[in-house]
Length: 215
Image (cartoon, rainbow, N blue to C red; front, side, top):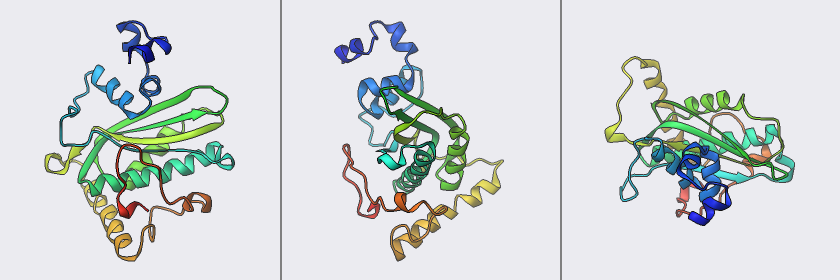
């Protein structure tokens, strides 16, 4: 790891502290870099020995025809919808959404995030994605990813007493999950994704074994 940090131009603690979440993600080669950044800056997340998950995310290298801001946006929505479903099936809530993109032409990458009260509502998360997306630079994207962070097990979740409407909305996403279980995955969802996005059924999962319902 020291060699990786040195190759990235990080040779002391001050430079490590000032490194962006996306930069540490590149150094670690995955979401563990984002988690390290959070721990370094005092975020209270579960230690590695915990039985609880620390994050849920998906990323995808875009096909050439989808390497546009709109193509990346469509796939980000698709990935977030899937991550939110995993969140509910794992019986978690999330407090933070992160979005990362890498660019064609060795231009590095981009990262942004937003935090909120504990939720697992797909509609709410998609709305937060739209807010983040307004800040996406106009470079040609190579890959896109989303990650749900600061996970809270359902038995530790604290309802927001001042958001009764949000509590009602929280019931919609599990209902959609049950309909898809009965009639087939993606029978119903939050909006209609373009055909080239809908045609993509699975993802290569390098850190876990995918569940049957994901395909």
